[in-house]
Image (tube, rainbow, N blue to C red; front, side, top):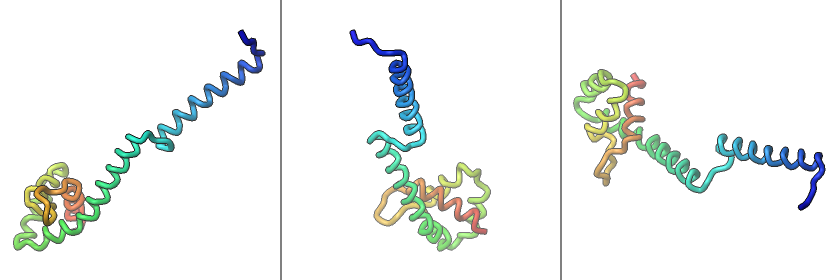
Length: 117
């Protein structure tokens, strides 16, 4: 068996503790991601970007309706968590060529419409 001096043991324990602390900090601050975590983060950011890009088209579609002012009043009556569903039900967040509305765009659209006026 190899015998280490007390100083060497302390250095080894300190190095191991430092490595564990470094791993904890880098993973909690997203400085180091696993491939699966990076993929989830990228997917989430892409969905948010698409929703933000589609929201102005949703607003334009909403405002181009004949009864836009009545719909806006109805939208503002809704609870905040129900507004996106109201936009989805009106098909204003459905893009051409798509069969279902984009829920992220519906939420962003509802936020834009209620804060605009």
